[in-house]
Image (tube, rainbow, N blue to C red; front, side, top):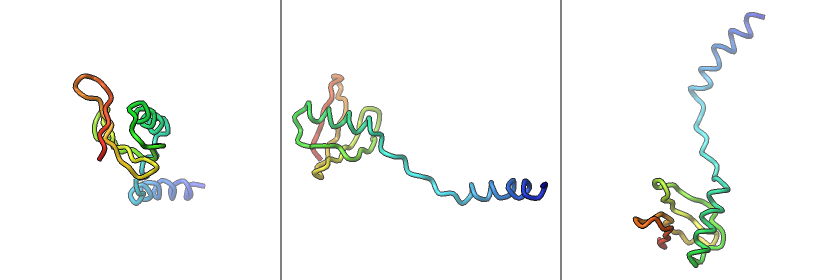
Length: 84
């Protein structure tokens, strides 16, 4: 019984050494929020399918139709979207 426990103790750090990082899944709430912001700003998008965070309150949103927008909060504190 001692041998399996010792083997697991030795193999666990080795497994962690070779483990690849898993990319973060897209946050569905963030994608919905960006879709809503673009809709309220009358930007043609449909659904946001992916988003890349640039900084706090600053994202690059990719739409279902392939268009991309930079969605951010401007100096006046208002949500803004720029087509890329």
